[in-house]
Length: 509
Image 1: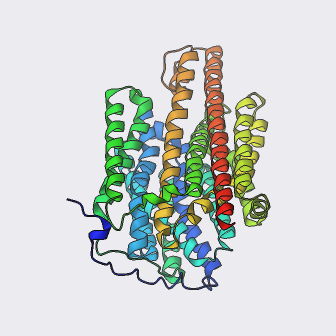
Image 2 (image 1 turned 90 degrees about the horizontal axis):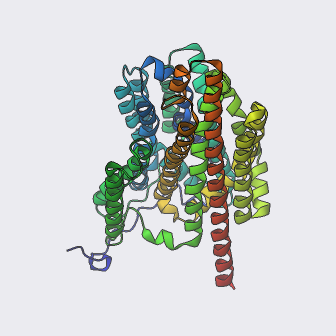
Image 3 (image 1 turned 45 degrees about the horizontal axis):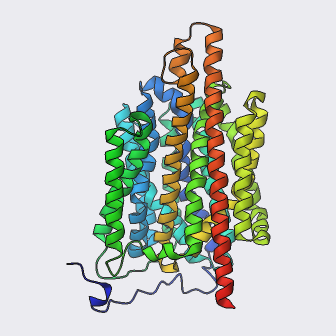
């Protein structure tokens, strides 16, 4: 029988965190921020770098549509399953130590991926990279919360968030440069020198910090959360291929729900849970994470489809496609590295900043969707709007999540933030991809399951034009669905955070 927390003997108090005890923040905090952002960048590039390599992989590895989906999603699938466990391990055993382990695992996976000779090998390597990525995504944000004072955290998170956006958007650009001069494996091997530099810098400059609680790690919780999240994301990924009502998808989703329910029950019954469920009673925390899922759903899926549109419909090569997605990242970097985004957010306050930021992002998606007939101009306008919205809203959202979690649980907070972001992105790729596929299949004049196959089967210029028109129509529908999700997520988060602010004001009064 499981005992309650009160029945346990008094636990050893948490070990003091030397970093957290410094009231003015760490003396080298800005240098350390640069180091951990470098580590973060290596992971984020690989979230999108494969998008521009899809045509090359289809040709050179004879990869099917399902293979391509797994190459992209195996990475996020493993990350999603391990982020909570990784964050807990970072808090317990040391954030610097887990950062180093994550870099080593990520580098080893990159080497195997770059030398892969088949789709199966590449998928397995991407899954291995996801293990290292989970450790890196949680420890970088957790370290930020430890080395900066509360007053400096919004600015630091703004820079961290800008690097996130830069990595996400620069993936297609880096991939395009590599594919323009080398074979597809170079998009992974280029990680190796960056990982080596990050390892040396982390070892030299990042201080150790941890918060060891209890006598034993929550191994049962780690296993249950990993199995549950992996099964849930797998159901999302396989839904478009096998059908949402198929036995495989329904059985996997049902299993995921049962395992995650058991995980929640277990966490509520042990004295030192990996995930404290009381976090979800905090309105600020709930509002931030709820909006995060819908925002990443719309953005992740829409940008995944946009890179295909630039290559397949507008006819750009990999490098050109990467360059044409760069304005979004450049806008984020310009606004956040100069501090403009942080100043705007401070003046507006958290709820309004999120609402304004997400409205701009949704408007950018609508611009891309409705102005595709005007070539790249509508896409450029949309990317700049998305970048401005991201610069204003995303750092505020991340800070709302992390500031709602106790400082000693920063790794778990980062794990929650990363888990929901990966979950939302995976769901967006699957659902918006399914929307595009359904619309495309209903409109194409030839029997084919993908745009390249339909183009190959088209027998005339007129048929090929109808195929690209069908793909554009499917893209428009998907982007509009994504824009609704982003706007809805922003409004939900803003409303809940506004209620939290009012409740805090009443308590203080």
